Amino acid sequence: MNLKVYLETLGCSKNLVDSEIMLGILDRHNYKIVDNEYEADVIIINTCGFIESAKEESVDTILELSRLKKEGKCKYIIVTGCLSQRYFNELSMELPEVDAFIGTTNFDEIADVIKNLIENKKRYINIKDINAHIDYNLPRMLTTPSHTAYLKIAEGCDNYCTYCIIPKIRGRYRSRPIETIIEEAKILASKGIKELIIIAQDITRYGIDLYGNYKLTQLLEELSKIDNIKWIRLQYSYPDIISDDLIDLMASNKKICNYIDIPLQHCNDEILKKMNRKTTKQSIINLINKFRSKIPSIAIRTSIIVGFPGETGEQFNELLEFIKEVEFDRLGVFTYSLEENTPAAKFPNQIPQEIKEERLNKIMQLQKDISYKKNMDKIGNIYDILIEEKVENENVYIGRTEFDAPEVDGIVYVQSNKKLKIGEFFKVKIIDALEYDLIGEVINEFSEQTDNC
Image (cartoon, rainbow, N blue to C red; front, side):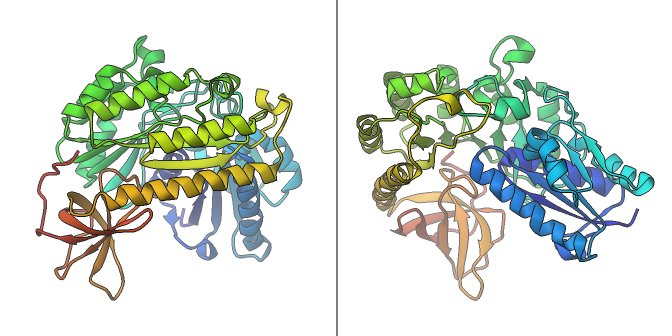
């Protein structure tokens, strides 16, 4: 089939991996993948349905791209992903221009879906059970830079936070067998990938469902043996079961970046309990102190929710003071989003949106000051920088330290009179700092082996 396909991915990196698998399947079936929606015969929208703003973005994108079908520029519109899984009945009635809906566990049927549309010439809706098995022995077409890839190690979530809909659209926690993850990582390394970003809704629970024990440390030990992989980055590590073994491994293994993403959401014990989080303020403080004691250069990223139902001014001020004292290296803050069919949606004392926004802005201003102070402290330091792109018409490149994940964290503007190769590591001395980004200059041509992670 010579149809041209365009795929739009919304939402998180886990969704991105699903999209890359769909693209790999379509490429194997000889569909032509295009980067421009105006060229496409088939448009696929992989949606997000996590919070209200994400749902609105997904619907707006569907409507915008469906316009191309009305104008005769494309033949079929297919919607997949979390929003499709969650609201396919409503969407199918309200969006008659969409030709097919599939969910979060049967995106691997994408080639059959298109074939069905062509042959049967009628609408196709197939939403499978959220706990269905996903086959990862499938082709994958990477859409990330040629040196970085996400490695999804599990599906679903068993944490059941009271504000979160993920278990109802992604299912129970399902770990992938270690051997399939290692096999995929080796394939990625053979394609030139130098940075593996380990993702799942909660990577710290990896293995508990398959093996009866947590196996993240063992998995990381095996991944670190793979040649050509320089950085292994950990994202979405829930704080309640981060083990001493994991911290010790991070401290001793140079391939595992001194970076960890720990979504804490709050610090007040009453709010944490209402959220169904399995931690307390003191246990969080103990964990952070342990990380910083064993890995002094660790960059800790977290996410915070403000305006959770019943959050008092006093509880918010406690959170503000906590952030001021801890000084997180990276922090994202979100206003609480009321999601139907979650326990928190029925909680009393919902907070007005304007108060949520006010609280968010206070935290962001505080974190901006913290980030600037920490960046200023880096002036004079030398880091291995992964170069990712060149600034047009300037002798400046853009790269990242081991302390920065792509898309969400800061960058380093690297000055160099010599041509730097994209996707390689260079030693860079930091000479100036901005609120979230750094400025540096190359001090050697190429760093064969990273020293900082």
